[in-house]
Amino acid sequence: QVQLVESGGGLVQAGGSLTLSCAASQGTLRNYAMGWFRQVPGKDREFVAFISWSGANIVYSDSVKGRFIVSRVNAKNTVYLQMNSLKPEDTAVYYCAAGRVGYILTTPKEYTYWGQGTQVTVSS
Image (cartoon, rainbow, N blue to C red; front, side, top):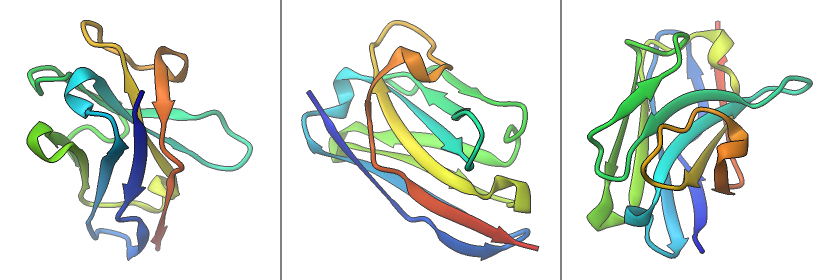
């Protein structure tokens, strides 16, 4: 079992950058593939990025490809989402999630553990 805690959200102007962190307060992340999702009120949770347990496999949604970078440092039990060239449409609550290794996971139902989320607001 793993407990996830996101941090790093906040308010930023369009074109700016933020880096989100997802740390395990319990358990070890090296046993899991990790994903980032985001959600706005009234909409389904949207896939943002996936990173395999080793970092060798990375997948991005088309909406963030070329602007966001996902990474992980297993020794620090932490996964990161570096968000560059932010747009107002990136405004959402961002969640990290842990899922089983060996697969590329891009839907919420494929993940077992979730953090509480962190708000990102991009002003125009």
